[in-house]
Image 1 (tube, rainbow, N blue to C red):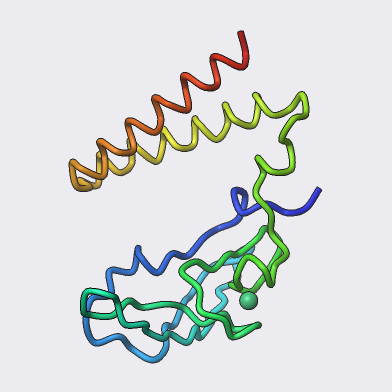
Image 2 (cartoon, protein in one colour):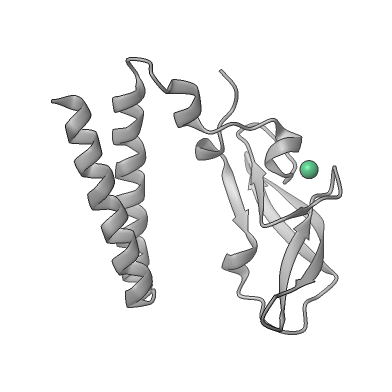
Length: 146
Ligand SMILES: [Zn+2]
């Protein structure tokens, strides 16, 4: 089984809240088994269709533009999904007897994320979309289990 994005720590460019004045680098510090590791992640931008520009990471290994970087368990580098050879859990368990179980686990994680977003006061529109998606997944899962 390949390592999956779902079990990695993920750094999202969207969570950084960068709007203007995009710095050329981002210094990221994270702790691995009690040891602090610092990484220098280059940033870049791409103009949007309707004006402005969006920030992206540049993967330190392949140099490609990425919205997310991942830190798998036992790894020491934040790299893109391709460089870590990561897959998605549901692709690997699709059409096996484990699929409903993993769907239930993912649904629970999504629900915890929803509660966390509520606590952090995310936009009502965002929360509403999330709630709808959780309800859809719940209905689909119950359809499979019964
Ligand atoms: Zn890469």
